[in-house]
Image (tube, rainbow, N blue to C red; front, top):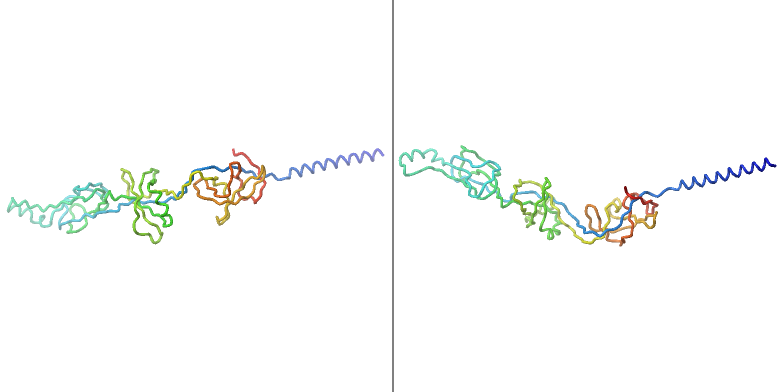
Length: 307
């Protein structure tokens, strides 16, 4: 009888231990929530920027031509040289003077026949084309050089037709050169023609700088499309969307361990934040910032503090 009692006691202890271990195993197998971090709304001044390119150009280039048939005696300048208005560029000697000048002067010294013709710069700028050198024979009307007019220096910005409506609020612009230098510019009138392929309009930008900027340099220009002070916004990382970028939502905490999907309508955005038009979130609402990608509409989460 004692042996039977002892057997039941041992069996009962083993069963109780098994149940305890089973309960512990079940508790440890309960999955923990997805680790996430949270943030809340902020009131910011937001600007939506459109970045466009602008190319430097001299709109006026003046050809310098010979007024006689003759030989070039002197060239005062090289390709790329800066010139002033009225500066001597070429000295020409007519064909007749080159052949008969000395003979005529020998017959009559008071005649002072030289046949020398000077050609001066009609404006201030740069020699962008040089066609002839000293000793060349040129004909009347032949092009000797081309001078860019420094007063016609602009940056030309190609603006998509649908964005031209944002220009009235962007009269003063900042141009960023490839080396990072920034210069001020003033938006001026457009050219009365469109590029048929890209459907863009070319606008002139007059820059305020004393440095020499080469032609065909490409600068970056930022246009402010929208400006909104005191906008309710969230970091970009909180916003989720479908594959077509048509529907947007965030994951909002409804208690300490549960987050739910909340569809939103977004407004303007910048590099880091997006305006939330609806629904109306409060400063106390906790929105998932990290760990939110791929979660179901209702998800168990564990809020962790970023390192």
